[in-house]
Image (spheres, rainbow, N blue to C red):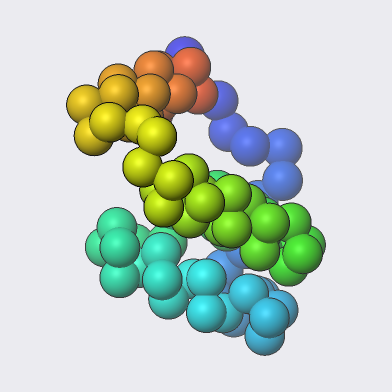
Length: 83
């Protein structure tokens, strides 16, 4: 199942200035801007909150690397990501 988002992800030139740093971090970390980042960029406070949540989970070290990988695969399957 491959569904298109109802809202188009923002392109680089459409991104509010407050969200540009998140685009760059996404590009550095993943080699491209993630679609989720491009969608959350519509609302910079939400993009910041999501980013802080991910950082907090990473820093807590409560999840093992193996469990994080399994979670990522499961979420990817749920949203129809091909990897």
